[in-house]
Image (cartoon, rainbow, N blue to C red; front, side, top):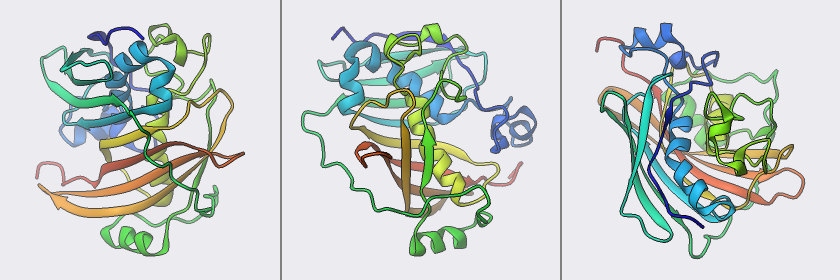
Length: 273
């Protein structure tokens, strides 16, 4: 293991063509932003980057992260991840962009003892032809009662989240496909987004917070299943929020590789409100 260190890079929006058009310039500007938002999961991966560099595969096996994205980060903006309160197995971090805006905060640590991993429920899998409800409080209340469908996924080099930087060479060797090729934080936390969006149609919506626990690295080509459940619903400052628990398993043996709690704004207050 090496020391946890500050880190600088240039933000990369891998989701400009996403069904969630908050990542496009046109939709984001309609809501008062400067341009398309870099995904919250990508910002989270920036805060985790020093952990992967310092702790290597141990991070992928027992790393815990609490990340809050409070302000947008834009494609092409330079940023710095500043670490503090660093110990042998934990650190606090903030992400500050080129304009001095504090965009996100995080706490990372290696668990001394892993919490008991989740057990797969066997939820029915989402399919491409499946009808899903348009997002609303009532839709989420119904999903909380009836349960949500699981998302099948696969980690591979052609995925748009295969890198969290425009030049993958800036990522740790452990996460590059010319290295170990393990799944990075943007992809893993992206699974929380995609299973939520697979169960109800949302556009636009914003990923704002995650608590995540790693249990095992995810190798190239691994087939995954992502299960999800609504935990809480609330309103704040005109936005409508949902909290969901998300558990990710290897499909072939049902071994848990990550568990998380995602907080998202599923309905933004109207532009200009």
